[in-house]
Image 1 (cartoon, rainbow, N blue to C red):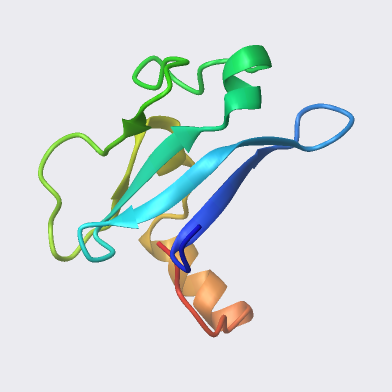
Image 2 (cartoon, rainbow, N blue to C red; image 1 turned 135 degrees about the vertical axis):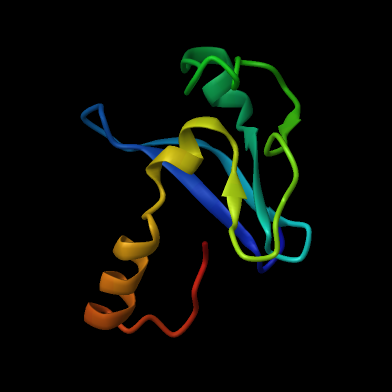
Length: 98
């Protein structure tokens, strides 16, 4: 585990289930995903481009300096530019993640 690791959880069941580890890559310009072994055994693919395979999934395409990218469904779940502004204004987090 590194300081830049984040943990992805599925909250659709009675109890939260650990899906896997998200890691900042390319100096914070991208986010990868590696499914946990328990999720591989009893979970489901988060999207078509994230099949249940024991590998580290990297964002597709070229990473740009002004926009962080994540893999598949994880990229769809993170806030857009307007959402990030609202979070920074309302919550005033000490550390930005995506």
